[in-house]
Length: 431
Image 1 (cartoon, rainbow, N blue to C red):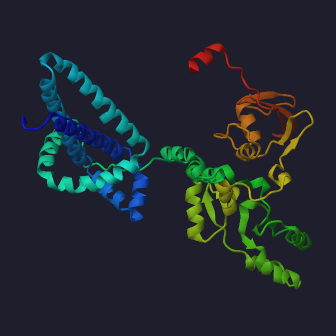
Image 2: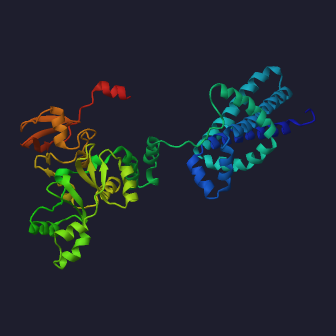
């Protein structure tokens, strides 16, 4: 070492500090890579991404290799600093040199490279992979010994290095990824993706047309009335029943009847012959399951039944798709057919309106985890049929019963949401 000049020692020390920074930065870069983007780039043929993915399949090995190299250059840098200090000064300067070396390593070999790698992991990790892959082959025996000891200690704590570094995302984690995608995913597409994630939380009971609103053909009615219903129907598929929807015969598609209807060749027997067997589904079926069931059964419409087999409503494929992409119709009157704005800023709402549909179309936040209609929500809360003029409040929305009919509420007045003022104590608790 005495034959090497002091200038050469400074150059070697500088090289060691650079190597230390590269080891530190590449470690952070590899560990902070987006694993899903890494897999995408690897499948697309990116060589650096392929090598990085292989290295990260066993993170214990690459971490062991990096720490071996990093500790080696740091110890070597410390030894060189001692030699240079003794050449230029006496032993009293060793403490100052150690402090300066620690500051230089901390700043230029740790903080700066690791911060840069955390901000631009791919720019550091991919080139480093080309170095680490062959280096791991060469130093594998030494890395294996180090990992053998480290993994043995980890097993004492119930941990294993064999666990996959790419764990599956939960539904809530995937929701967070979509929400934080920002401009990478258009706002409308974000809503669609989130709606798909919510399909498993919503059942057919939440979106079905209730039985009292089902439009169908009562085959026992006079033929002239049946023809009038067929001609004026706004639906392409209609249930055919005897007397009530509970005695449904089948489901008829208007396309099968148009030709005979135009030629005046349609009669009861022809209508019954054109009816297809009904498709029944239980009321608690999640929407994501029912969507697949519609596809498998080649159906577009189903009748919803309860545990006793009684028909509770009707759901269509379009209803489920609207949960994902929003309302198909662009007619505001159709979208808010149960809501009537008033001059004073309130809304008169039909009490049989579905709460979930009201929340989606009006931007309200009424509770929809219990009863499905306003009538059911209010009567369940009050445990009686209220008199007109009775007022209740749900989620800061004042609701006033305007009209009742028989054993049900008919019309409700909904006032704008009342925002609670934030108290000083609440403000301080938030901070």
